[in-house]
Length: 288
Image 1 (spheres, rainbow, N blue to C red):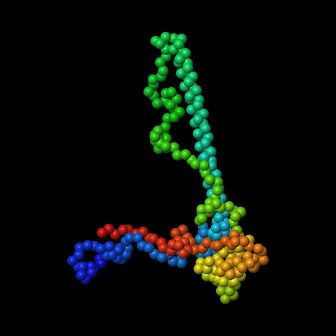
Image 2: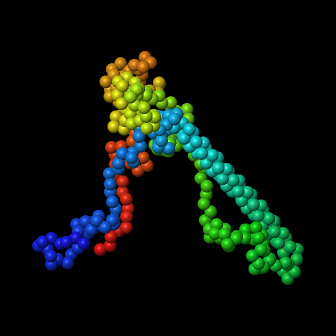
Image 3: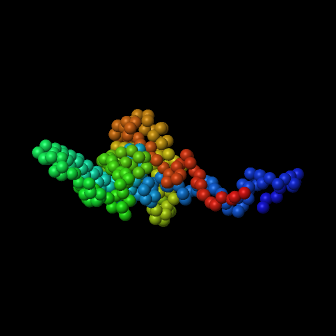
């Protein structure tokens, strides 16, 4: 336990500072730590698989994906939409059948009421047929609506949840905006040609560079993608070279401001670059 201060040896109060120090030493309480380099996604890795992209594509918002992974994601969302649409159509058909059954039951009730009235007119009250007073739960058509008491969803007081009509649009898993396959742009990386580096491409620390300035690309270097050609360049190159005359130095094509897409970099499921680089580890709480 933490010792009290020199002039506070007689104090019986367990202060907040002492409690916090003891919790850190004993391994209790929530621990906040700065996220290290291993927990931050590299700029050239897929936002879904967190692995280097084999066939990189980028969205209009600048999020990088592997073409195979994003195609699989879109197909899974389409299948999920078809499944929910079938459930919605099944519910509509069920509601329509219920309306028809209610209308038929109402017509049958009116017919029985009319026949009973006619019999009362032609016969005396003593000879009239009294309506059914059976207490059976199967009488008067109740057998059609008898619930199954061992199934919670079939109880009389169970509320049937309505299935909402599903949305056909596929949303980006990172930005949450509508995503279409035709809007994905193929990315062209420029490899770093270093004859002294014999490592494989994945093991290399410096894999790609700007094709115009030959600056090495990394998470610390803001990058952008030219939409018309797919080349990845640095934002410094955009500001100092491209914005002067808005001409692509690699192809000579005219560019517009919307043709420059900033590349989103360095984020995982719980950490984003320059926004939140702390992760919390919840541990047992120390009770005073």
